[in-house]
Length: 426
DNA sequence: ACTGATGCGTC
DNA sequence: GTCGGAC
DNA sequence: GTCCGACGACGCATCAGT
Image (tube, rainbow, N blue to C red; front, side, top):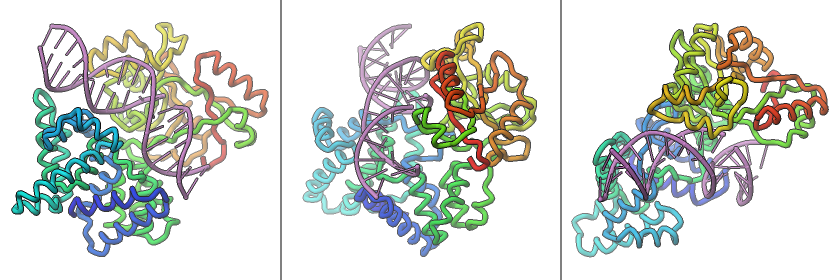
């Protein structure tokens, strides 16, 4: 598929704020692929729609280009100095629109002198595959001179793009595509186009949350059907999407959840999803980056104190004082977010992993098991240590109990508390 | 070898 | 992480 | 209530320029 077709979709999506209309644009676009049975680029199209090059679970580098660098690129390409471009940027509001504005002027001028380059001017020839491989090159370029190399590749791309295409190209590069759709809306569009019924959304949503690669899910859907999408399950080595909490006044907990419910400390640290396969420990961040290298001490304590050959679980890693008595605030932990001198800093800033959930044990998925069942299993398999504990969790029966739990939580340096329903399906 | 600008990812 | 807009 | 995007603080990595 040509990039101009995708650009047109971006443009359509951007033209409305109505979700239903966006879903309609998406499903029409997908139905067109369906008619032509042209699924070759489906995964790449999905990634680009998400404003990304690869799904988060692929540990692929970022572009390393953002607004300031793009201004340089536009400047080089158009001959307009960067100060002037910044002025236009303020007026236009975004870097993509700025480029579109400048280029459409320039190309008009150019066409007066150079009739031979009509194709270049219309910019309609760029294949998504080519765009994609060039973008990958930009992301993979590193080291001395990488700056210029990246800009060089980008200039090449811009010269093959129409102003409209350039607009979205630059937005993709700067991670500001913002056409109003993200995973949930894309899933709706896919569901409608390829299953005909919006009710099937849950199937795709579930598959995506357990294997967060929407490009791959789409491919399964179009090539093998919904039946195969249903079979997608949590796997070792593939991090699942994090369940996010929402903020609420804690006195509202009883109203919403009824009693009893479970309350846990909300810790001021960094969330980790841990995959243990034998001696092999992988730690994933909330955005599914593999950050195992950052916490060798955590990996070690898991290796030695989690009595399960294969297991996936979640916890919050928190900075501790040297006696492992007091939890320290997030800023202290953030010193651990580094690539070099990892061993030194891990001695300087000790941490404790507070485990709070179990996702898979052996070959058995725990994602649909009840909270108490998951907790019980965790208690069985984890030998608590200074550096590895289960998060404090209690059953709350009354407002009085809630109040006192909240107060102790705050006293001990927590951010607050988490409330979890004890219903089976949550 | 050092510094500032830029980019990135956590909360 | 928070916030607010659109639906 | 759901979804998306705009926003901020902080610390570290990388690279260009010197």
